[in-house]
Amino acid sequence: MMSDNKAILGKLSEAIVELDIDSIVGLCESAIDSGVPPYDIVINGMAKGMEIVGNKYEEGEYYLAELIMAGETMKEGMTYLEPHLAESEIEKAGTAIVGTVKGDLHDIGKNVFVSLLRAQNYDVIDLGVDISPDQFVEATKEHKPNIVAMSALLTTTMVEMENVVKQLEEAGLRDGVKIIIGGAPLNQKYASGIGADAAASDAVEGIRIINEWR
Ligand code: B12
Image 1: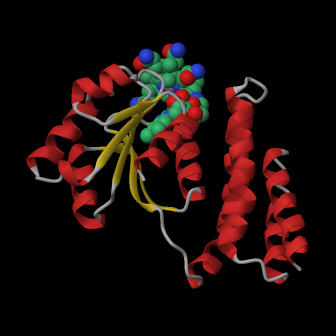
Image 2: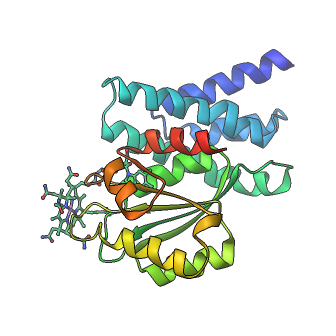
């Protein structure tokens, strides 16, 4: 029985690595039918595959296209699993609020990061794109996240990140959260300068940083 589960989890991981979006839901379905706990399907199945994809990306074997496709494949599986996950006892890793800052409509990278976060068992509130500092503050009040994550792809919008940090400070919410920023134009120096905790140049690095905070 145990070894059966192991084989199923291996197949799930493999499907993510092979970007096999057509079979991921079927594999999740048969895993559920075989009694594999939904949590295992996510963490020891698909997320394991995502980890491998991340390594391949960092080693230069996979490119952004594969990273995105793997994220999409995982998303398909997650959509199927969501009702099952809600039923089961899962220890959440934490809550994260994610959004692309005001004036910026780029969301492909943010969406990759959101998929990876969900795979790590975070509750993710994805605010979407063009999110104002007020919206970040309101969402932080409402959802009490441990992480606030911002994305920006434009040099003209990255300045909005500083406004978000400032307004979180003014609202007395800054000390309760860790702030991570991401997107092509950003680096650690910029993050320190605006009072954010970290910057990540890619989504996999972002996940690694966040897991170090746990
Ligand atoms: C696709 C794209 C668009 C699409 C966006 C579609 C969408 N739904 O996102 C469209 C066509 C709408 C668009 C519009 C514009 N774009 Co554009 N766009 C791009 C392009 C080609 C790819 C971006 C992308 O999706 N990459 C793939 C993803 C996976 O990578 P990523 O975004 O970098 O994300 C990764 C990391 O950065 C990180 N990450 C991202 N966010 C976060 C957040 C956190 C918390 C973490 C941890 C990590 C993380 O993780 C991701 C995966 O590792 C880039 C060029 C490029 N090669 O980057 C230009 C680019 C970003 N765009 C640019 C420009 C100028 C514009 C426009 C102003 C063009 C115009 N004149 O109208 C408009 C602005 C619209 C707006 N207000 O936002 C410039 C920005 C220049 C600059 N330095 O400011 C670029 C660099 C092109 C260029 N060389 O000129 N764009």
